[in-house]
Length: 294
Image 1 (cartoon, one colour):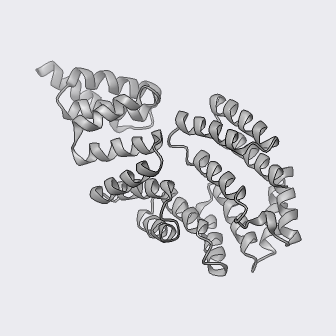
Image 2 (cartoon, rainbow, N blue to C red):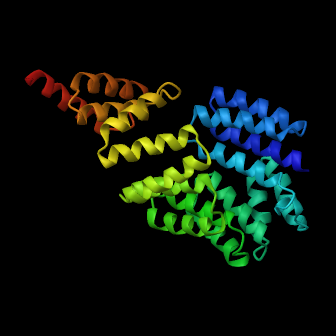
Image 3 (tube, rainbow, N blue to C red):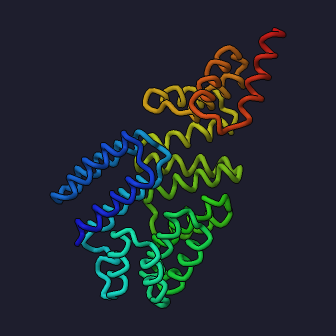
């Protein structure tokens, strides 16, 4: 049963979020799970995280494997509620309506509410996800994973204060959670709590040094005005991460350091890779004017 659920989690991740590169790695990880080699599976999920440092789904997938593989953990794998097991079967069959209706019929069951919340979260329905996570919390307040998931929901809708509150709750139960410290660093960054953000990301990196956390660290340094150190870290990250975001921040650091030619070069790379940030065109044009008038 454990292998079946883990393989389903891989399939769900693939269909929703995977690029060709992550799909290859997840295929290999799923194969290792088939044979019960969870450590090797995690190695390939780590490759996904290295390729896509902001991919918290991959990080959560890794944490889920560790949690499910922990002999002391309790989850819906052990649930005696037949409706929950039936709902999982509907989910694997792709019958979302029957899955949701079956889970909704178990109003006072913790796992029914928790899984229902996860289902809404996976479909980006954060309002319903929050509603059912809170119902799960009211039934079993000691299950700390609910707090982390609530923090993710609130971050998704940019409600940073509520996200921070639930991360604080989660960390009161899990004082060595690198992902929670990293998430709280990003939340504090969005709240302009730069000192707290820096302290949190240092804690996360002390526990687990990975690219996603170093990316957050580099952003915090930028917003602190430490442009030299921020640029160095983004340049180092660019050896492994060639994304619009990385080049954007390199360019912004160049701009802040009055290195206008380099700023244009890097902002140009950022805009080629993605045109989602509409402010970059304005900054780019402003730098061009500065160079022309120089």
